Amino acid sequence: MEEPAHLSFDEQLDLLISRGIVVKDGSREIAISRLKDIGYYKIKSFSLPLSRVDRDKNRVYENVTFQDILNRFYADKDLRISLLHSIEDIEVSIKTKIAHILGKNGAYYYLKFSNWCNKEEYCKYYLDDKESYFKNKIVGRVKRSDSIEIKEKRNLKDNKYPTIWLLVEILTFGDITELLELMSQKNLKILANYYNCTPDQLKSWLKSLKFIRNNCAHNSTVIDIQIKTKPIILPDWKINLFTNQKNEVTRRLAVTLCIIKEMMISINPDYNFGKIYGAVNLLITNATDREKAANLIGFANEESFYNLFPRKKKKFKKRKKDILHIKS
Image: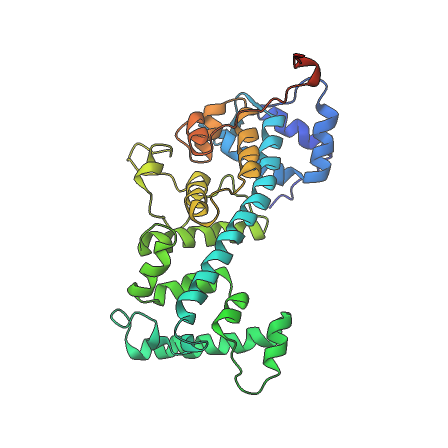
């Protein structure tokens, strides 16, 4: 097998240009600088959705500039940070509500899974196994926790397990989605009512957010992501989402944005989506083909994004010299 040749940064750029990527006049040095800082394959990965494979199985680009690819890279970077922030707010809210629902029946009520789990769907032995596994996990988490509250409590010999209100502080997003799968319908309905949705909708949305969160946390690309588990789509969302010829609704980033927007309405109606808006808006408006840029992240068209996140009207402050003072 022939070993790949080592290419200089100039040669890497020439290779991209030979495949159809346009470097505008005067931008070559900037492009080379970005290749040095970001890396050829990272840049190439963000270019792939803008390319096509021809009959000879060569990857080619049409009307794609190097700046288009950079815009996608930086938009993705900004989005990962913004999405982590909003998903964290949702995670904290869910944990707080679970602690409130189960805590009404006692600080350690949660330790007996038969108290709050779905006994109609799961047999006693299955729940006992889950309970034993969960308790062992908690003990390990408590030992490793840096929480001052938990450190103080674990020195007490009364109970090696934390109260439900402290427990949620050491649970991961993954733990939460697992517990919701076991939770009784009665408890799930109480939880889902906080977010004006059904239990099935809530569970499907949180699974999708967990997937996105993990990608953000591990610096994986989000603007080209495909959600593995199909979330339940609300009718109001569908009009703004891309649908293929088989009438299948997209599982790309746009769905995640719909979920976040829907849940944040219940958590914080005044939540500032400015950074999410800014990153996606930049991605679309700076693209050579704006319609395609919107489609690639799962929106039906460019306007669909602005239906979800309306453009804010700029407020203009009156300057003093523009104000006519009338003397009496």
